Length: 138
Image (tube, rainbow, N blue to C red; front, side, top):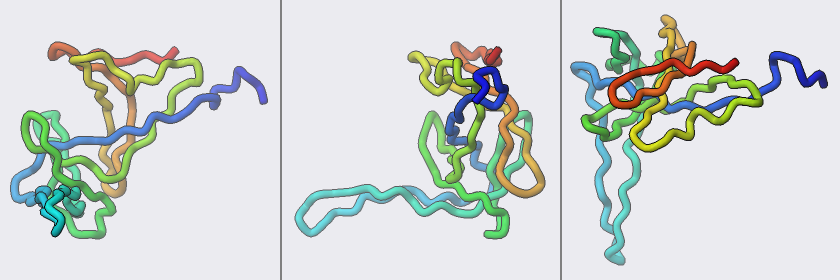
């Protein structure tokens, strides 16, 4: 195989978070006490959602099951919807894994939102101290 082929590389798996839109009721986790006294907190069941963009922010909204997208609740600074299906982003083989970030850095992804199906990643960036900087993979 030609080492200079542009298709040589790998994929980074991305979990997408969206703001919880109005009228979206995401179930929360509940702690279960077992008969032996131990406890466990299973993740809540994912529910069908639709995605929209409002004020330059990705927002999860209620949707029928036919949307094909599912999310569950997660807690950050506020409650967010995390898409169940990860997205794959192609990176060249010589590039360091961008998902490994230093403290106080976040990996962000710019996506398009098609009428149907999952978001499609366009490019990655790093947010640090409130500044978002696109990553270059040349």
